[in-house]
Length: 353
Image (cartoon, rainbow, N blue to C red; front, top):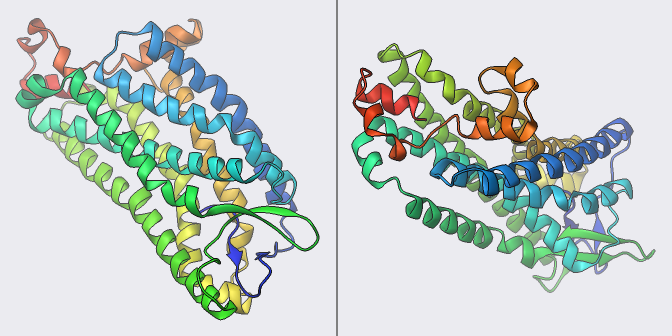
């Protein structure tokens, strides 16, 4: 989870105190927010233009287009979060934007991780069941899957819209917090409800938004790697580099954030009652900034992780993006000539990824 929780210790809502000695990490968070906003909006906007308007619509381009849409929409609202960090977590934008920003954070997480999970499953099916993929991997199926993904993501982010809200302290400062404190009649009851609900929410967030999807991705690419190794198809693994880089960057960027959240769930009671483990609070902004940075990485990876890097540098950027995204053609659209070539069927499917 991200940033502040309310502490229902008395009748006036308070915000977790900010530990001392974090100026460097605070500046780091601001800089990463700014870089993510600029490159996220420009890079993902370019991907949306190329994948949405310049390229033939395929299963692969639909996946990458939806990923870019999620990253672009999240990057566009980052200035609100950046202003809040600069103001030491104060929130001057009202209750609706408080809810919207944190809904968009989780939409970006869920769409990103579920999309790369879907792509990994798609690749694995192409390898294990090429005949089925040839007959059933269609545009209409891809569109239905994308629609279902966005609906599921919106449902999963409904708690954010319900529980994120603004509160004002006695000195007039306003904060955007994740608040369970309205459940319970006394301060002790509200504290117990808060600790229980916050732990449940943090653990479920970690399981549904990170551990389960990443486990599926790992299994799928373990199967693909074993297939490549067993059949000595080293060249066939080259088109997997772009997506492998996308998965790796997602893990590197989001894992510290999710780990910090699960540690907060484990030690939340000690943090609130005894003032222990304050390092977790210090790391909230840096880890969330690193997670947000993932939103601007994918367009860079599309361009620079493909083949013929030096050639791409002298081409126009839209053309480079188009080549990167079409470097992984859809197996369902492979021509009869390709499928009847000298390569064995399983190698044809691996090259089609």
